[in-house]
Length: 426
Image 1 (cartoon, helix red, strand yellow):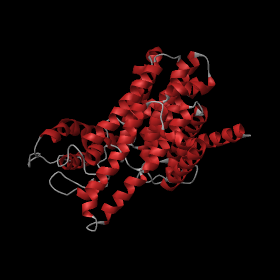
Image 2 (image 1 turned 135 degrees about the vertical axis):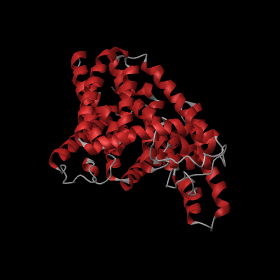
Image 3 (image 1 turned 180 degrees about the vertical axis):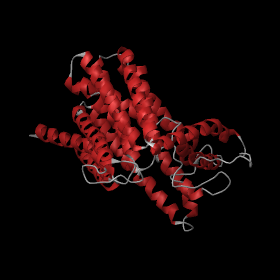
Image 4 (image 1 turned 60 degrees about the horizontal axis):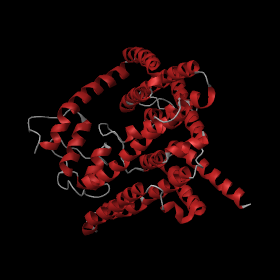
């Protein structure tokens, strides 16, 4: 009876973890409720065992990061209580952020014990990404998607409605569908190659149509990373790149708004590439230079603020409190770059802690990857691709500390940290 009860609760845990992919679509309330349920159920199943990881170096690093985030937030905000309600709010949020530590520990324990249902996660991610891409194509063709949502601002977003984040969702989770042929459908290498190439083109087109430019670049970079890692399929995957490029140029040239969007992107990338490094070592950008790129202006504001507390940072969500408008400076809720946000909020100390953790995870993944067969490699590859580009420093992004992104970051780190245990369930 006890065995059956444990089996039921672990199956429920797996269901809730896979449901996180749908919660992202439903919004922050659904995500937070889901995370709370996972944390409570995990504590019921594992008790205090979740706080003791097998790999102690990971344990020390992750605990140090969360503890440091709380301490530096309280240290920077407590003296200013009463002057702005955001100071108290940030202190409370730093404590509530611990829910993602519990999520990380529960998922880590589940995977560590060999109980993570990777097939369920794969199927859920594959279905949602395929359905979203199909929904976008229908929306472009008919003007409305399957749920009746119309295109807003000439940017289709499928069942996300007026939230233009469909490209980012597809960029992250489409690879579960792309690799599903290897995992579930075909044993023939030729059939798998055809399925992968057709799927790559299908999602390539869908992401372009959303007008989400950074997800498009990250998706293209993800394909290149896949080609770099998977030597056995490399020569065939170049066909996917070739045909995707053809579709890209056809779509860009035939849809003026998409063409204008990508023309603007190339100009933005060029200016950021030339000027962004100078932000870090120049005392002040010359008065005569005016940025015509919104992201670069926000990046500059972040870098100049970081210089005030380089080593220790200014605490959680400090950008929205301390930012000031000025020449080539603008203020938003966050810096739109994980790397800059971490430097600004937790300084070089916190940045080093979380990136050492990530580097160890990457090393652990690569050791596993090159010791196993194609199917075992492909099962874990989507988790790595998503994580790699979440931590990629040269990209615009949401906030590292937002509910949406934090769930994904710490979920993936927990899975990849124990990647060798996933093989048991494939």
